[in-house]
Length: 127
Image (tube, rainbow, N blue to C red; front, side, top):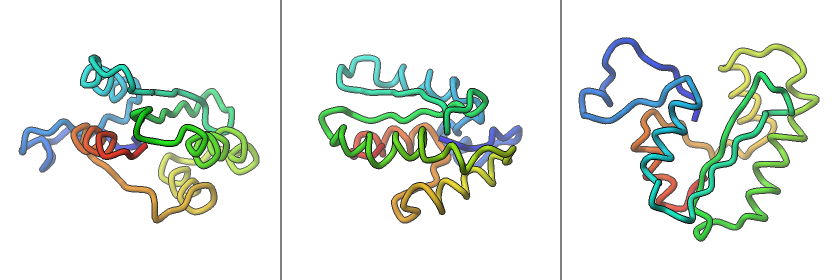
């Protein structure tokens, strides 16, 4: 859910889609509002590598994913394995590159630009 907020209208905005914000809580508020009636939505907020300055979140539908796999393939790498890798002050772009190349399988990562894309991916069983 990393994406820069744009001050000028993007193509997505012109099509009536809401772009992701660089502010995590703005994105999570929109996501929670959309899924407010869904009892099986899971949103987990945590700190990347245990660093309070790097709060991130994952969201998924509980009945569509394997929670043990989420723990092993996402939570553990991002919370624990990331600690030695992210002790320095990396920019958001550098951080995202490190996550893609060292912690998570890059072929499984999609760059999304709008809340609608995130919602569609969650509904399709993605995290």
